[in-house]
Image (cartoon, rainbow, N blue to C red; front, side, top):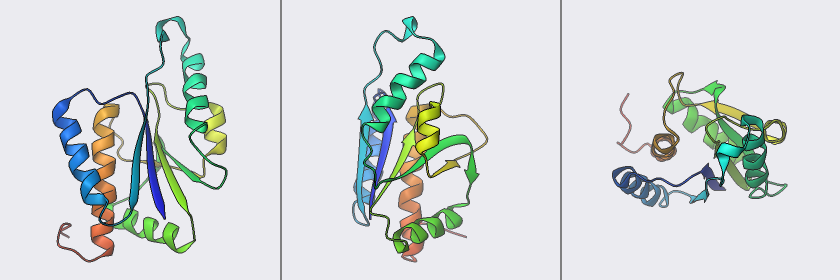
Length: 157
């Protein structure tokens, strides 16, 4: 199985990017992982919230193939403990999913079109985090999930 994380806008905090790079490298020992960044939309001040979500949605959907399984990182999604998330990853691998795509939306969330295409939604927390921090938190949780599946000592119960 391949895992792809799609996010909108670059990470402009160097220390966060260093950590993202570190966990991405660690994750590569377990699975093929790609982080794909969609550039920020230009002239957003001339767009309404819904227009911005639609434009971002078009860009997101252009990065997804018909056989990909799409999971949105959404505040209204299902929450998991780290162990339960690792179990979910194992279920996806066992089911024969070829590419599992997770998406971090823009500042206003996702368009209705993206929600309609999604195979599920997960929430990292009831709290709100910056989109740049969510990238790090999510990649770390992917890494943690794989260390749990391999019974490695990274995760403590």
